[in-house]
Image (cartoon, rainbow, N blue to C red; front, top):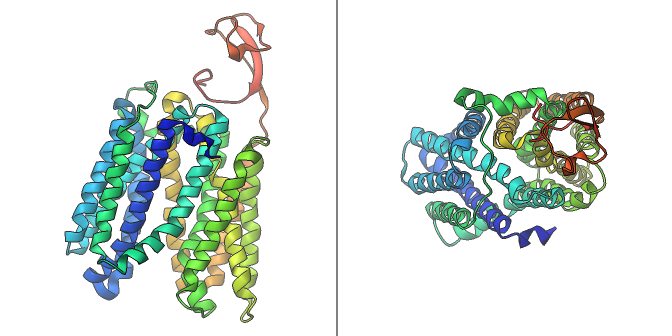
Length: 440
């Protein structure tokens, strides 16, 4: 899997992603401590609002990125986003009002909503071979999982030596280093979008998701994953502290089990995807989420027993594994389903729509768990995950061959293998695909 790091452009971009993720992780810890300094006992509500603002920024800003990305060099866009994030992180230690936190968080996450989809759209151009791109997706999944484990530990170690305000300095340095690494590589040029109207470009990716059957299925898969990840993210501390009566130290173990399950699958998938199509991995992963929710319901129904803790860790690991089965190949699916000139818009739409699902499931998991109990949260989110996975199975049919003609390709073109001359061009059939050779 590490062979893709031999590509200098990808190596620098991957390093930029990892460093920026660590910086973001440090900022998350520091932001929680800053909220407590400003709001005291209301720090939880401040952080909850900040997370909601983050999701709103992701949902609203990412499609707009698809409209402007084709009008400026992608490297310039990514570096600008890094510099904005560094500037915001530099200002955060000096705020003393809650509204200032909200404003800066919106700016920070808006810049992230510009950087991440552009970064995701660049990688398929840097690594055009699908085998290499698959390995890059697995490495990206590992980077996210390792960051969730490493950043809190690093923050804890640093806080034993310095005050939390200095963590923002680490965030600034991370974003600046990311910008330098992006500047250090030359990125392939992308084709201009076919539609030059800004509004049409802003909605191009979303329209693509509602047009291509595989991407419609991906919408449902995003919702299934959001239901599971919301349950883990929001209610892990409730299960550990209130339901099982364990100490605070057990919370990182539960979250670590989720990350470990995700990493194991991410490491195994490159070889699996060399032999089987994405559909054969992503749909079973989504269906598995329903069974894992059923197991979680059984644990939640049990009122006592020392067995509940190790079984909960196993359930959390299965959640991570199933989510990784869906999330890791997602980039391959988006890349294959979008024409080259609409790839940035498609990745921006995936970023926006997937976070829209989390914007729904995060508050649902928290509100139901607090007001109606954990069992109600399990039933509601499990029902959403099961319904979404079954809908994805229905929408994502097995690929069928479509007979069509190419009127603008010359004899001997690699795509015309086994094609025959028809009335107006070369005629052949293969599975449905949207790319520069098949814009419709």
